[in-house]
Length: 90
Image (tube, rainbow, N blue to C red; front, side, top):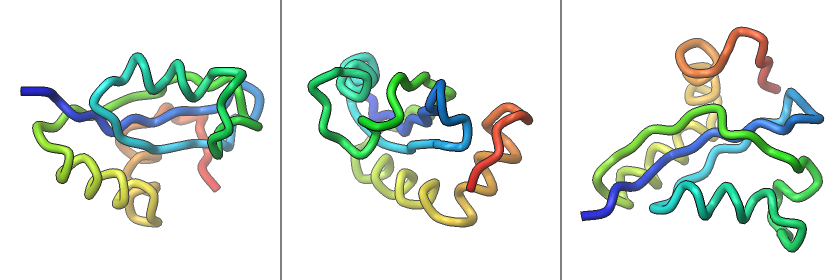
């Protein structure tokens, strides 16, 4: 059984830029986000660093948590409980 991950990335250059995503291969996905070939929403904010992740057993649960963390309450939770104090989300 594969684990699924909800991950939080932050830009080295733009400290206010936080990206939340989900994947079943964290190492590959981080590499894709930082790839020069990347045309993702994160491309203008490279390089990105992994700030944290949460592991769950199903893709469905990962997608639901990803959606939650992208919303207002989820961002507030990340700021208060997961991210370092110096990170200020928009």
